[in-house]
Length: 173
Image (cartoon, rainbow, N blue to C red; front, side, top):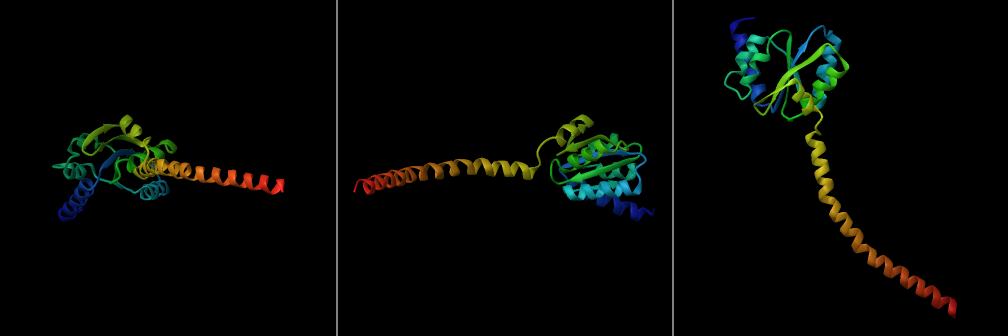
């Protein structure tokens, strides 16, 4: 790889790092091409990206970013998952690592904070941003739904009382 290509790759990696809220560092030993393709597909489906990188170039890309403290994790057969969503990369990486022993979670970072492997696994158990938004909307709408039900209840009771009274009046004649 020529020097200009390496520089372009480092700049691309820095762009990915700066635009990410979550980075997961993995070791992948023995992943076949099919398994790596499936992993990348799952990452894209979760809103994350997955790259196998040269450790030296990745360490250069980390310099001057919020994730510079992750540099010591880059030894051996390393690959990185990036996502703008704070937990998408962690969820996808942990889900795949649970099914395939060839992928090992080494550590990661969340908004510039370094995380160990256990913290990345714990992060993966949290609900996604979309799930949290759905729950929040549900909580906001619940009181309005209950209020609408309460407002309709007296009118329904009044209608039932009038109907019962009409039935009584009709049966008395």
